Length: 273
Image (tube, rainbow, N blue to C red; front, side, top):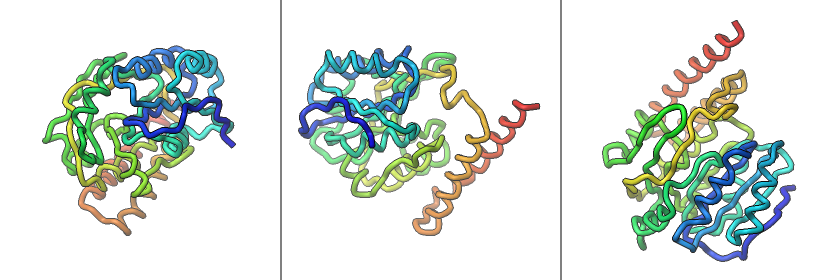
């Protein structure tokens, strides 16, 4: 059973910000404060501690004492980012979902207020968000109509991640869109399903997230055989989806994942030579 330490009063919010946290003691405070200091107040932050072994939990609990719009959940079993996000999705009260990794942060205190105005009173399944990459490299990614088509997202997008989109929760629930658990690269299936099944979309052409690149021991900087195994699991799931829900885009993404599997296999064995 998951241990829920603190949860705010249940009431529908405009946004639920979902944060998976695992051994990010140097970053978690910055990330949480970027949410609780937002000018838009009708929001909730759900932080899921996925069995951290450093001081991540201690820092989260101190912030929970200070701010009243944080829901804190502690996993008793490590489920990786996908499992942590699913746990939060199942208790989220927001009309819209924004994912925020615990080592990243919202760009400014008014970004959710600006995003709220972009969405307005419409029911938008997915809103594409701008972001800036910081750390061991610098890059600015601002969505445009050309980069937000379904074909582009399947074929060309370098960053198929869930946090560069804002998702309508009812859309995710109605289509049973959730993350694979205990798996690296869990983003692939979630984002593919979410983008392909969406009927309405908008663009927020400004920086919402600031992404930390090159953090030591992050999943994207660690290569081992499980990375390859989990890529194969993704491929297997995509092939099953191809049989039941064929789209022209699924062939594109399967080809990309095959190439990525070969690359990760080469990277893994080059390390042990």
